[in-house]
Length: 419
Length: 163
Ligand SMILES: Cc1cc2nc3c(=O)[nH]c(=O)nc-3n(C[C@H](O)[C@H](O)[C@H](O)COP(=O)(O)OP(=O)(O)OC[C@H]3O[C@@H](n4cnc5c(N)ncnc54)[C@H](O)[C@@H]3O)c2cc1C
Ligand code: SF4
Ligand code: SF4
Image 1: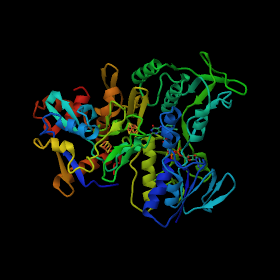
Image 2: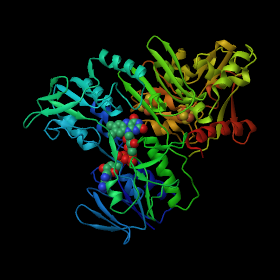
Image 3: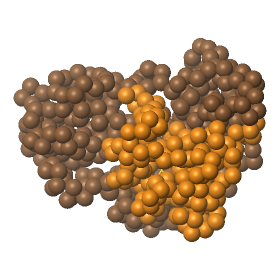
Image 4: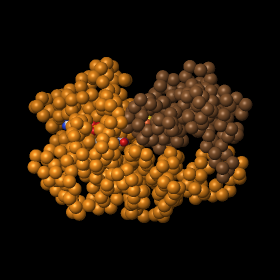
């Protein structure tokens, strides 16, 4: 069997090495648009901020590929797929045949249509090459466009490097898809406390400068700066799949075995659209743990094992300086268009904050800052199990002191919920 | 995945909350009497007068390994999952995703630490410290409690992957 994998990212490598572990004979080829062994995009902000060295971002060395007998072809950006003849074509025109093809090329940085976005001095933090350029750039004032997890991490990194940092967010609060307003406002205050200026509900109109960035113009102000970081989200790479006639929605559509609509072509990682493991709704979480699990499923199916992907889950952390926060499941806002009995449980203790989102007495999401976050895993477990909140509350009232030992997991959960 | 040959079993019913295990753990790993440096954590649930020892179960499909941005959570040959403190940046993703909240933050370094079963010792020090109460015991492969403990650990797998 000849297995060709497009994309040398987290998902692509997981498929390649999982297949190699069980099939010593398969011919495995990874086509990479970049020119380095596998690295972890999640660690790029820490490399940028100097919290880890360049070597620490890598998950593989060239030797790992040699030992695994995996052909890693650098600078081989795939531009089209021909499912009839079972070949892919790279940007140099080279054609490569396959028996099984895996699309693991992730997503592309969303570049907003802002005048001046091509000006030198505008960077991103999505891939190693670009991040290295940003790390080598010598600036003093940076504007980060977008306040998703990547934007916040990039802002922290630049602050650590001594930059004056501004974050501009179009929505009403930072991290808008991950946190509700009360949690986000607290995080925003913390950012401001570290000297990072945050402007929400503001739209970038133009990046000024000829030959080098000199300012960012928004609908409210002009900020002088010499560095701009674009962090406005990642869009799944569907264009390549469409060249093969593969069905796409927001991402590449796959079944529970990670097969696309075209025979012998699989897809996994940031480029696919899957379902939420908890709710069964269409999900596009684009997170590392989902990429790994989807790749494991694809590899097992390629190996002929019976397997069924149960879905992706939303879990993300927001961490900068001494602030630690995390979120899982749905936000309150995401529930706006859902019918049912909604309830928010909040706990607060100095700078620590817990917010649990319930639907029909079941936990469907939560956000926490500080010590409450340390036990977030208990709430995630309760969400998976669909524990009934009223049951827990009743148990907490009736269980006797000293005689509740067998119910300790529930007591721990109830205690966290402040019952 | 490596199946562990040995497993720590906890019994909150027997735990008196004395925290000797925490002292033993800190002594073993850091040579200091400082409960903040312990990888075992006794959680006191005062409303019901309960003490629960919390310790890493070395889940079969450990979610902490997958969410760590630095790839610092590593499965060791003895089956335990420990932190490579050279690359950990203290982001706490592993703490948040852990179904029992087991990784602890070393307050002096800001990095995480979890149970390594006292590799090389005949018995983990916490187990020795708890010999009288037996709230923390070591069960070896094949024993009934080992199977029960492994079952508990593989539950995480069901939570996180459904399989
Ligand atoms: C800065 C940053 C921080 C992040 N932090 C977190 C975090 O804390 N937690 C978390 O869960 N997730 C995080 N993520 C998301 C996580 O990195 C992704 O979900 C994960 O990398 C997805 O893996 P993947 O293999 O699908 O895609 P990628 O890892 O993006 O790999 C895709 C690869 O395909 C290559 N490629 C693209 N097109 C082609 C082509 N046409 N031909 C050949 N090769 C191609 C790309 O060069 C790339 O190497 C972060 C992402 C970034 C950018
Ligand atoms: S998720 Fe928690 S219990 Fe499981 S291996 Fe990781 S730290 Fe240990
Ligand atoms: S705290 Fe350290 S070990 Fe835990 S997820 Fe973060 S970097 Fe990894």
